[in-house]
Amino acid sequence: MLKKLFPRLNLGMIPVILTLAWPTMLEQLLQTTVQYIDTAMVGSLGTQATAAVGATTTVNWLIGSTISALGVGFLSFIARALGAKDEAAAKKAVSQAVLAVLLVGSLFTVITLSLSGVVPVLMQVDESIRELAGRYFFILYLPMLPRAASIIFGTVLRAAGDTKTPMKIGVVVNIMNVVLNYLMIYPTRPLTLFSLTFTMPGLGWGVIGAGAASAIAFAVGGIGITIALWKHPMVSPKGQKLRPDASILKPCMKVALPNMLQRFGTSLGYVAFASMINSLGEISTAAHTIANTVESAFYIPGYGMQTAAATLAGNAYGAKDQKRMKELSAMFIPIEIGLMILSGGLLFLLAPSLMGLFSQSQEVIRLGAAVLRMVAVSEPFYGFSIIIEGMMQGVGNTKKPFAYNIMGMWLVRIVGTFICTQLLGFGLVSAWACMIAHNLLLFFLFLRCYVQGTWNPLNQKAVV
Image 1 (cartoon, rainbow, N blue to C red):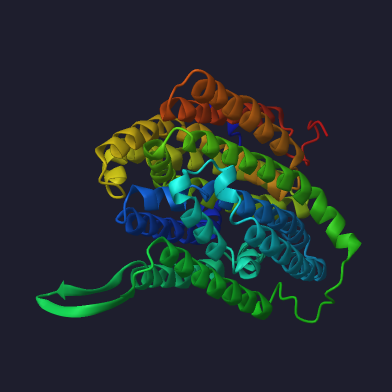
Image 2 (cartoon, rainbow, N blue to C red):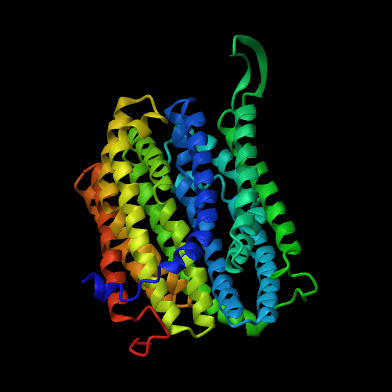
């Protein structure tokens, strides 16, 4: 069975894969660590503060993932162009990415700021924290333009094989976020360090301080990644004309649009999912928010490898190298599954302790640990899906992932959660069971796609 699934193992490709993957993994690890620290700091203010910050998290995913989808279109085009040794086409695509950042960043600024007071209502947030959640959301999206730059320009650099620059900028952003959190969330207070007592200044803004700290860090990150892209020797937009180019935008949008619809549809599903969970009460909302934060760290190996898979598959497709395409899949899949088995095992063992880092409520800890242990078992299956989807993105095949993800999200997770929580009166555990069923469906669909060879456009047997 293994020989059939992984017919060509080329151990010499492991250093190439890890060279691309490790900076992305480290970048995501740092982001998750900061998210952990944010959650712990806000959690120290009480369950209401945690719920206020977490209540709009899925809307953040909706916006971020929609912008990321544009980046996937440029990633696929640039990776293929560089694989075909066509640097001129790659640079033209980068100029179009700059236009996309200006357009999308401005559009989402208007949308998010104007709807900041409406979002908590739509998310069924408890009335006592709606105003606070709305103010936090507004502040978080003031720097929407630099946030769009961070997402799209970071993807452009990774498409060129430069995963270290986004990582380095991410380190600066995350350190800044933590320091500003510490200064803005808490009031001025006496601190004792190594028997030395001193006054630590602070603004005491609480949840609003957390939002302001993140907003400033996002702005710095966006400016930093823009400067890095401008100075990059291979994909700098310097000297390119900033006007729409249909010959570049058309193939980019052909890839990006299905991915955008997929991410928008699935993220909208996350919003509906979270809205139903918010209706279960403050304890469920807090447990769900914290469990999501904890879980995100254990997906880092999967998504780090996905970025490398997309870039290398795009390069191989651009070079029309069928042998390398087969070798890539044969290497990525076992590495990914092994990493996800390890991370899933750790999540299962550490779930109660990790929940305890962010909440003092035993009820929240017990509920969050239960759902985390459930999802830990499904991680290796989800890891397989992540890799195949990444390789399909790299070669520009985004239609099937769109169909698979929308089907899983809306027909399994959302309908199932609605029946379980709204009609049958079950709690958070049933909602996460529906989420796991969604992940397992994706595994079987992507496994079928891989075995049949339809993921690979260079495969003569692939059904186009």
